[in-house]
View (cartoon, rainbow, N blue to C red):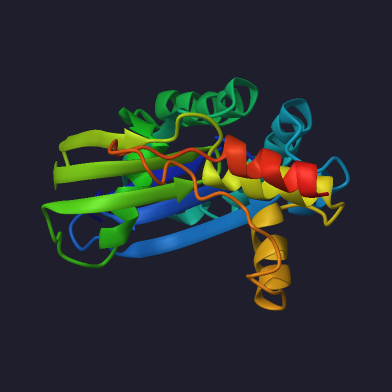
Length: 221
């Protein structure tokens, strides 16, 4: 039996996730995610300590489903940054334990790069590329020359796109996560009813800013 699988663990925020990837074919052999959205919805956002406790329960449950693949593992990968420190610790602790017990190397992963790598699951790389990364607490424009050569060329000056959605949804008491809820409301709304500002419209810089737009919504409310 060949050792050609990488087991990957993700716990950077409020999703507990484990995946198994075939190194040679890039095939996603196994993937499962346990979401915490319902648990955090009553607070209008992610509560780090609660998220960490939920990871401690959810990750072992998912790992139990992967045990039959342990003999095929080449390495263990885990998100180490960026993210909430208390939730990252849960994934890292599990990865370290697996690395020691199975005697497999441990790979540290920047999960923002993971978003870019995911574009090529079961596909050939199509690079260079310019990537707009809009993920939770991050809004970035990235020049990707290769999978080992990436440069951030623009990012938010304040809130991320996702944070702004969540905060606006909380202001309107719509629930969490805010993005899908605000989007559904917007589809049924009148885009000309309010005169909200377009961030950095006159700026020549490659940057994003959402705090002013978010505040304009607050004032309107």
